Image (cartoon, rainbow, N blue to C red):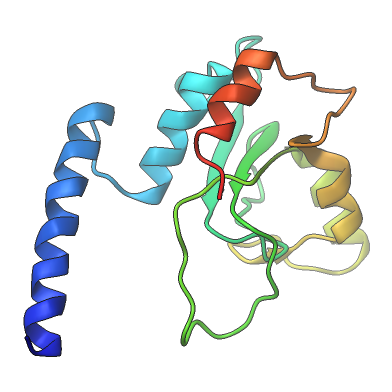
Length: 161
């Protein structure tokens, strides 16, 4: 079998799997839609809002590279589902499996203030300091400012590496 034949067959299989995922979540099987669906199931996020009404932007990064897609006038929080921690390097020879190894809940105002104090542009590739990632982690570490239930932890573990 040639490389073209193999790639074509794998894409057909991927399309079949994506169709099944789309049927489950009611949206195209893209990382953003899948992440929003997981956030709805685990955290009750609905229409970009937490249960208490505060706004939240959901992101799913297949690797945690220290970058956060932000907006100048964004939500109150950013809920980030992330794969393994990695340095932002080229993609040659690597994979990006859809896994959730950690979850972060960022207070947007805190991150924006930190970025501005360092002269960093608020953008789709905002470089957030490691200290802020550590402070925002709510899974797997326990964070007293946002406690997860045992059921939430079990659901997130379904998506781990």
